[in-house]
Length: 551
Image (cartoon, rainbow, N blue to C red):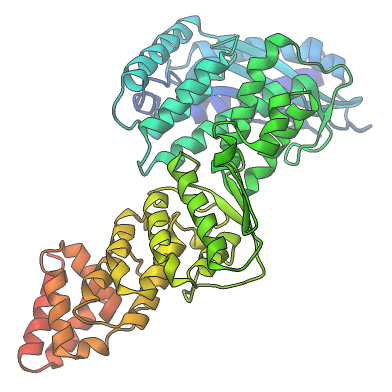
């Protein structure tokens, strides 16, 4: 063997040694014990070589991507890589795998190489290893989990379990022939068991992530070439790409993937979902074409379409969008649109949705921090008609759902369905305060902050008094510390202070502390104020400060 090549191989082996030492320096046994659906941690390694530099990482290699350019200064050839380097590294890595603790390596392990050589780039599979004992153990555990935790289950499941299960069911190493119907049934079961649970979005994220990986890395390359980049993919159908009858089930799984992404993933992921739909259409899928126009077909045509002289409404559950065109800016037009929306949601239309509004009127709620979206504008316009307020209350009762969101809002402007109707009604009339309190009980304050602006607006509109204090406290309890609530002047009135103290009596210490922070800026500040206050007022403030104090 050439001395230079031998030296290079020694360097590559040293890098493998370093990588093995790095991944072995963890408590693998503890990690895999978190769930029976994990039998090992590492399933792949990548050796990269270019210009004399060698690096081994956990990276994966997309063997469908172009191999890259070489260079005249590279002394290594493709022939040397394939005939001398690959066999030597395969043997060496296998020897290393045999000596590792069982929990370190997954049931299967792939070792890829990415080499820059004189002729160009060489992407090559160096080693593919399968531990049949681990594989069979994992298959048994998957079957038991589905039967016991999902099919016979009655309780929410763990996101970590969904992460592994979703990837396992789409793993051709475990299931060479994918069963789309079973996969979709399992994924729907997971969502149903976790409905109303704060981790539902995390479960859906794991499901769509696994599906997207399968579509982009396994299904699409069969029929399309990626003419873009690894990060910005552009698909061009292969000249010989055809779908036969045996592949229709897989198309259903692709369409399910697209729908899940379009319904629940952030807006920046929509392009991926649309690309899946468009590729299925290009392959001749009639259902894919129908989905883009009519939706999933779950709903009767009369339930997703309304057209008369007042308004035109159409709904597409695939895109989770409702298009509303107001033909006449009248109370009757908004009445019909509201009834259409309320019935639609009651029939099971995704509550995480948005409204595409066509209207000549632009009203906005007087609440800081709200997105100026079509959904917001529709409800602000409807709220201008007092006779519609009972209809808006009915809509809100159907729409409100913890951990669901209007899809035309993100980040700090995210808000639960029903938010605009509730905010507008609460500001308009104290008769809707019970609805406001019901809304606050459902709010996920960890992922939503628009209630801060509403609480400030509510206090500004209705003030602090016997009729408002209970609702204000409920709002404060579900608002964040960043809220700027200026009601200190009103609480200078002893009557109002007594009302507040009566409301917080019985609350948990951290809840009282939160109220004190929002009103006075913290317990220490309240203690100083109490120290300067006279008579009964000083005593009341001190008691309040004590109730909010730690230990």
